Image (tube, one colour):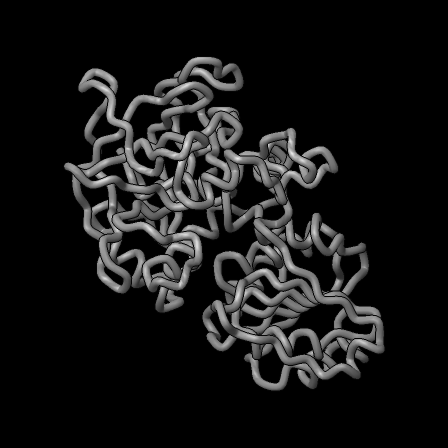
Length: 379
């Protein structure tokens, strides 16, 4: 069963949300009915939602997890718990929460091994496809069933998510800043600290200085890297990269040569955030023997990566990462603590705050590369 299972009018409310009705089309702000949370579920009033590159892929029809339209996009969010379903104990109405991109089941083989980011539990797999654990959705628009993007759909006034996706946080940090930790910050910082495990004194190359790339740079600073090279095709982004801790900047051209001119032999670590296969190959070639390259941005489906085999003889490694390989209950509170101690810049990531009605403008700004993050805010 993949449709909405509508309850009585007393158990459902009408809200405004941005619907994707056709790939490549503008989002439509419309009224959507949201059901009350069921067992193990939480209804969150969204305070803010960042606009991420993954949302753009969904709009363009390039996301493998968006197979049903209409869909409510958005996944980088935070808000206030409004209602909880039976059996929920981790949060209560009034709590401030970050809505995590994944809610590990805690019982599958990967969770048991400590790899919560690779959870293969039923609830997690259902959420990826925009469904609740019981195979239904809590959203509808008239007679149409509506799915929330990766089980969240935060370009909306409210979301219903599984309890494990709600990470309770203190109320003294603005929710529009906390929203950013749910995706861009945890992905970038986590790629450095969890995936690559960069050592103090290392040299790091970051290709792509957008919202996620800036957080890779912040992660490199936290890890104690002493040489942090930011590469991009936009000079304005490189200026921003310096503010976040880059020690060197280069306009992307011949990365192996450019990096070699700064660090003899190449970087210890490279992070490609562009999602362009050809750029990832250049980043890999810009590492020294024994170096590690992490693919943070995902290339489009059907793209192949071509790497000269000779480079592998130098014991170079290529790794992927999924959401910074983060465990939400562990890593999101850590990021909040780092912000409160002045070691993580969240405010500097916000280029603009816009209302839901301006969602298409925000999408256009992110697509153009003119902003680090556009944040949709709700009253």
